Length: 237
Image (tube, rainbow, N blue to C red):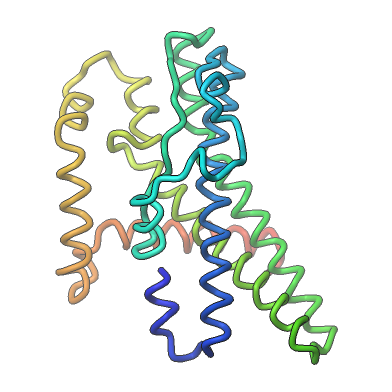
């Protein structure tokens, strides 16, 4: 993601710096609120594990995973340190697992919708106000980038986390709704790392020449397009 910004010839170096700062802020907000939402909903369902371990916080250090964050900056996909959840503490295990699992993507959907709406408002204001002061221009560009990337990043996280692949949120929902220890669950728990590796390697090699091979990128791109189309309808775009 940052690589694309650095090599985008349409951006000045000032805009590249502002965009990178905005991307970092958008990523931190997206992953922190995603994990926090998991912990809060788990707590509502009776599991105090995250609270007792100090993970019900907006402090990025508590959620930060260096390698996962670097991957998010470079390729747009990565992870934070997962919030600990003990399903045996849930008042209703099935309901607890499902609501906790979808809490993260629900938070990302709210963030994406809010970011899109704020950017629409920002653009509307900019069309009526002539920006001449450099500091005001920098502030405007930062928030413009923040809202644009905030929309895209959060939708990407929704699409990615809804995949029914272990240990993503989509897998947790499938695991909860299917018979215990079924073949699909056993297969995913055993081979999911190889599936992820294959999707990423093939997508970043063959996918550069034949887009159909970039299965993950194509899927996320279609979700982004669909959700942004819906947002445009809501905001009258």
